[in-house]
Amino acid sequence: MRGTSGDGAAGPELGLGLSEVGEYAVISVTGEIDMYTAPQLREAVRQLASEGRMRVAIDLTPTEFCDSTGLGVLIGARRRLSDSGGSLVVVCANPRIRKLLDLTGLDKVLDVREAVPGE
Amino acid sequence: MNGSKHDRAGGRAEPATVRFAFTPAAAYVRAARLVAADVAAHAGVATGLLDEVRQAVGEACTRAVLRHRDRGIEDLVRVEFAIGDRFVARITDNAQELRARPSGGFGVNAGRGDARANDHDTLEEDTLSEEITLIVLGGLVEDLVVTGPDANGGTTVSMSWPLPGSGSAADH
Figure (cartoon, rainbow over the protein chains, first blue to last red):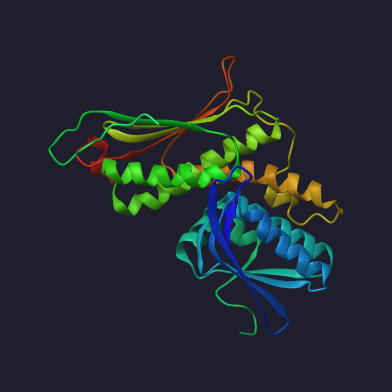
């Protein structure tokens, strides 16, 4: 998927792969998460929640780049799912993004794991 | 874009500047961070620091776009890279207010139970993101200064990284 803005500018690429592992719906994210592509990830979580899939894992291990907008989406997703009795797991064995989670303290706010539970 | 070739291979190089501005839209933030990494590499910033430059400039540009978008400002976001003793990046917005609305910080609010509409969620995530950009920048960049807003404009995020041959590079 290549993003294109209304004025034709090429944006970053984001790939969202959906799968199921145990009781988790897994969104595997490839490419770059930034303020241009983050709404797609936000919408994917909303879509799963609207289908009653309240246990969601977002796999950032294959993600090439993530900025603070992506972190904002993770926080929002966690809150929405928790409010509905569900949960969010962030899967990240990617040292660059782990560093980002660590330096913002989000590794303590979010449920960050090396693999999807049950995998 | 104003730029000049900068070759550090032959000893102490001449100062150089790359300067551009972009419409405050999400699609252009990637371009800005890629230019930052490319100019930094050309300037001689250590390969191991290029990801940091890319992330930091992206964060600063994201913050600027959010600040413009939040306040309905269509002015261009200004970006400048200066190559001298160090590689310096400056990202300037034109939003004079420091913050549009109060927020309690993501760590405190992340688990709140009150329901919100989707649009409100998006706005809140944007506000969170503006705050997180500064947290990321503070954790990522050793030499970081945020100035403004002042009577003449918005805020400027200034960051610098060492270059080979500069005195500060010896520290790294």
